[in-house]
Length: 448
View (cartoon, rainbow, N blue to C red):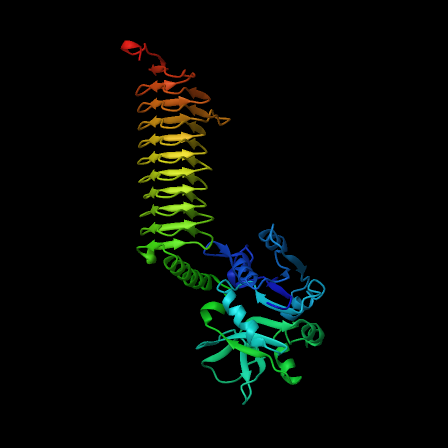
């Protein structure tokens, strides 16, 4: 916006209809708290300042904005939106325009806020509305014969006919000087609250009516209960999937694909049915995910294949093949060209390039060198009942089927453990061991 913009996010209410210990505005929609969706939409207008009004469970709301460039204003008494906005006057000094948004508006877009800004023109205020067949608890917009908005009537005060109506969406844009001059004159309602909606009738009475801007409900509706959360989730998930499709991602069955708002997918990624991608997951070009795969805050490199598996807070290099039914977790790092077979599990480990890890095996707290072969049934025994210990496996080592590596332990480069070995001491580079406990085998004939 050309004028300096201040944004107010209203987040002080109790949200009793949500029936939750978690503040209403922090309930997630597609993995992101509702209020963060509104915050991000407002950021698209390049505001000079953002103020979050807190009240009920203020500490939780403050914590949700940790590290973000916002200020907080506390509403010590929950006596209405008008009082909440009035308390922000000092924090927004110097801002020429003020945008007021509800924190429970997860479907807001920057585009609809830009339309609101353009539509205001020289009027002291503009506000978003939408048409609905069932106004319910929403305030109705009353227009005069010239189409001017002259009043917003709260549901509790409305006595007219039922049926479809234009209702207030609760998003306002004000000329700052006009707002601060008039907000101190808001009347106290019968409920003992100060309603911001009374500024709409004030503008009309002063001869320069606020501008109502009708929007699609799918962009401006607020949600204050669990049923609403489900509706918001469905709408936003469809929006996210559509954007990925436009960006060159193949999603073979959108109906069974769940992608959260912070997920980033490159062109030519393919998502097969029954997948859930959430957290800060990123997937590079050419990778195929699914079917039946969950990625949580995972980083997947180019040309990977992850089938019927879980990858959590871990990194896969390029051309990694995982699954089916594998589990990678605990900040594991899997190098390029690795293979993790059926029911393989990796936790808090680093695998070098070209490692082959076969079925029913577990690597926990391990460092594995390039091209090592981890045969079926191998386990790193990393926990002694009190502490975790690391296992180091050198490059080109061969770990035989059903080997148990009792950490802390080091297997040298090119070393070999025979099937069924229980290895309790370090194995030198190039050595071969077998047995329970494992003991050195004689060198191969010919000195190999």
